[in-house]
Image (tube, rainbow, N blue to C red; front, side):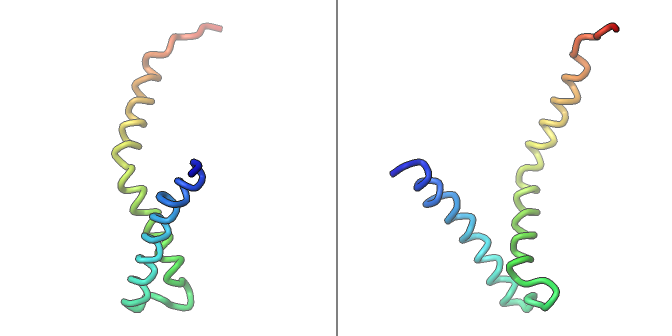
Length: 77
C-alpha cells in the first residue's frame, strides 16, 4: 500500500466522514435551505472548527515571528 492509498484511506475518508456527519446534522435540524445547502454549511462549519483547533499554533507562530523581527541584524544602506 503506497502513501497515496494510506492518505486516502485515513485522512481523506476521515475528513469526508466528518463533513458528511455535519451535513446530515444540519439537514436533520432543518438548516437545509434554498440559500445555503447543508453541504455548504458543513464545509463552513468544518473550516471554522479547524481554524479554532489550530488557533493556538497560529498565535504561537505569530509571536515567534514578531520576536524574530527584533533579532534581525540592522542593515545600513
